[in-house]
Every structure is written in C-alpha cells, then in structure tokens.
Length: 118
Length: 113
Image (tube, rainbow over all chains, first blue to last red; front, side):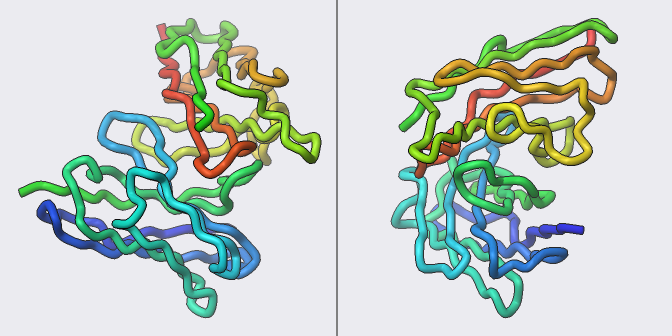
C-alpha cells in the first residue's frame, strides 16, 4: 500500500533552517510528481511546492519562493524540502502528497510539525 | 491565482440527514483537455487530508457512496446523502486546473447537531 512518511520537523528560531524528508513506499516513486502542502495551526491547506517525476520541473508558492528548495532522490524513494530564512508564519504541519495539479494529491503523509519561534 | 470560495464555513447536521457544501471558483475550471480538475478532500480531527472526489464527481476507492460530487464551470457541490458520525471533520475543495499555484477553499467544518 502507498505510504508517505515525513520527518525532520521541529522547533527552529526565526532566520534558521530546516530540512524535511518524505520517505515513499508502495508505489514506483520515480513515476510520480510530488508536492508539499502545509497547514498552519487551526488554519486551512496551503500548497507550498511541486516537483516533477524527474525533478526537471519545479514550482513554488510565492510565499516561499527564494527561501525553500524542493528536491528528490528517486534512488532513495525520497522527497525533500530545504527551508531557509524561516519566519514565524512558516509555522505549520507540512505534508508531502503524491501528485501535483490536475486530479492528483491522492495520497498524503501524516505530516511533520515545524515551529518557528524564538 | 484562482480563488476558491466555500459555503457554508460551518455546517451543523443531524445524524442521518443530508448535507451539502458549495464551492465556487473565480474562473472556469474546465481545462484545455476537456476535464475539470476540481477535487474534494476530507480532514477528520487529528488526521491528514484524504481525497474523496476527483474531477468533480469521481469517488476515490473506499469512499462510501453516500458522498457525491457535482457541478461544472465555476460552481461545484459536495453532497452527503445521510451524515454519519465518522463524517465529522473539515472538507476542502481544490482546483488543479490553473496551476501553479494549486488553490484550496477555506474549508467547511461539518459537525453533528
């Protein structure tokens, strides 16, 4: 069965960095686009970033452009999100999900909490 | 960016009664391939979102048939024919036609009266 497991969240000071990982299993990871979506405490869902199956096409939300970097390692069935220059407003649960736009986002991980606070 | 507007934002429903959630987009969601990429997600308390419906009206595997999606263009609806206790949670619509960015509605909180 499809499984997505995020890790790497935690408490970080404003201006700091964090790297999130998402381990995928139960499907051919290299065949699928992947996305990161976040949810601030008590708030709705916000799409963060997308990467194509080969990694050649990448998109970011304006709110994270220039600060976050999405990447993947198909040999390790893993998706990553490098987050730099973190701000309080980046505090959220970060989910990885299979797919990008169109009719995707069919599977989601359990999420990892990132808290940006001094 | 396409703005997705849901109503109502809070939906108290009696067990066994129907429920309906509306989602409107700021522009038509018909893609050049003829498909309409409007999806619905359910997020139960303390859980990750789960896709229920894709391309307006297609139920995902394992989704009970009391859930149905309909609509076209800019107006869409998620209906639950008879609400059960396990349906409590927040429901989001999402458009995947005009992306990036993918955009979600604000969410509709369904609760039992």
